[in-house]
Length: 315
Figure: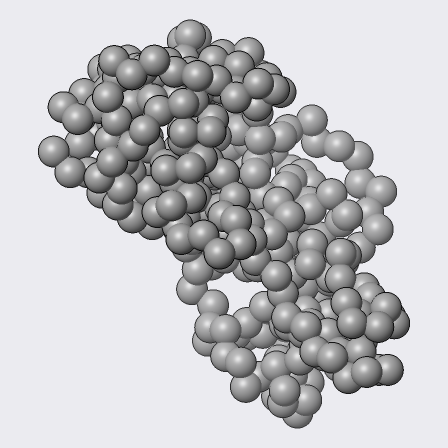
């Protein structure tokens, strides 16, 4: 049996047009600013969200044109969408990615991050919030020229920086990471592991960063072997999702392995690893949906890991 992702990962959804020419058109930018919608994001990556964690609380654009720190996220049906960093002193909502089941019941306006709110937003809002967080994270870490060390200027509506001293341009960085659902050759079990820092009982599929000069498939094989000591075969691509914490792109794969091969856990990285039957994963998903306890805690619904497990369990 060959499974595929049954739908797009939630942070891969987007409807707003990213037209590159707009980023170098001051006249059009001024027009889009006049009736634009502004998404404010604080240093913790949170934005105000209303209606039970489902609607972004956009601000109204003010002034004749966008300020220099404004980032043009895109345009949809003549409406310009922007992002602005703010130094928010908003109180903590108490809701984070570990308590996503409570988000849908939260009333009023809450400042939530992408992990907590991503799965409750529609495609437009999810794409805007994801892009805003990714760009702002990059700007917070790219204030100086990598060539000469001078402070850089934002250009192209926040989609690049330019050094006023040496002229070097730089664009947002994205770090590729692989994430792989390893199943047995009969496709009845999945290999799940947990890191020591995760909440008790939380398990997920395995992941790791792509190294310089390495193919994606080679990275999958290396990371699985390094983390749990298992050799994989039949590596195939499933899909991808941006993960701007701070700047990753998760590239999802599936692979097969022999469950009789002994595991060898990476010291300090992997605390446990188990082969889990499909029925157990289905039971865990059902228990979570019904608000019941289950020994197998699964990754949050914003992650591609969750979409991979749900798709495999339903196959």
